Image (cartoon, rainbow, N blue to C red; front, side, top):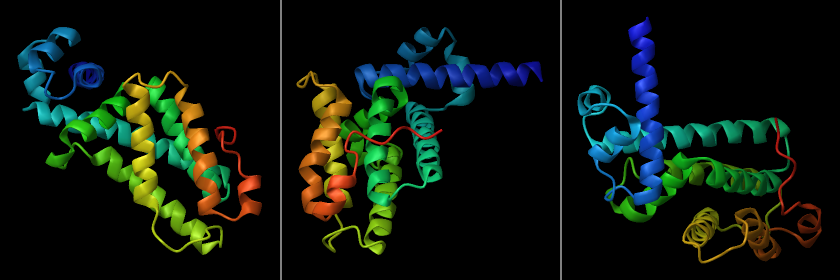
Length: 207
């Protein structure tokens, strides 16, 4: 049991360190030696858990996707209108960008390795699917003014905000960038009456 706990702790440590280094240097810019040195383990210990750097990237994506799932569950529990839930989701991701290296690394994976598909786009696919589900719910509730699927343009907007913020080109707080984006998007997405009721800064976090 003690050996198993140590193994689990080592694996968790490797994933945490890998996320931090992938976030800082990218997938190509990080090598196995960097990860083992920062984690304080041998290469043998790393290879016991992961046979290749891609498996570490997959583990980082699992972490960020799990964090997203927790956020989605909390937003669902708050039982807010779908469009407000969509806004709240964007702000939850904004908070994770600030606090979670795994989420930042997942965004960087998609920018730099998106053409390699899985596991480099897993987080984005999970996020996109959630956005699509919320938009379908909003459409079913009559909250949307159009019938076109705008999930991909919205995702592109979010990714663009993240790239702008992470590159340092914008000194504005990422949450403010998302709020400003919603002020721009909502008039073309929902009725004027509903747009006036929505909280673009995000409703109070649930849970």
